[in-house]
Length: 169
Image 1 (cartoon, rainbow, N blue to C red):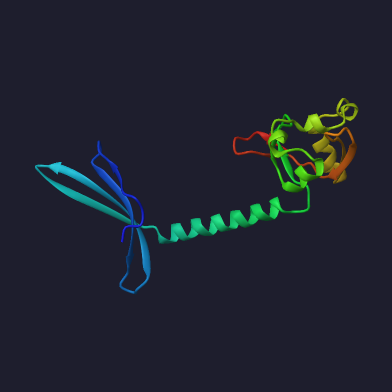
Image 2: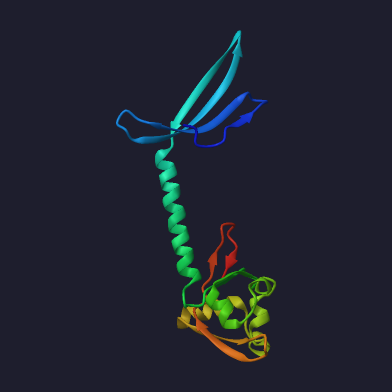
């Protein structure tokens, strides 16, 4: 039985598909098949197949694990956010967004520096805040909310690297 749409590449005279078959042991196997039209004298078709059942099962397990992890992070009572090295927000969970009372779309237009109390920020950089966290385990950031009230967020600001090697906090 054909499981996915067949992709035809006319210039290469190639067709790729994913098919599911029942093996002699009765187990269902998924194959990736590539059909190539070769014209040497008379045309004939070369079919190459690869069993991808394990790969698909592993991808499905990874997707489930990622979804579970994302649900835990998103619905955690802990405040979790990431910024790039300049302080631009890359991610914030619901607890952070609810705690600072800012619309999610608006948050991603802001910079962490926009939320930190200006006098405190004039004396310190994000890199130094991160360094102090390594020394003291926690730091208190004075945050100014949209309604101009001030709160302190206590936690750990760690630096790490993104896939391109840039610092994120």
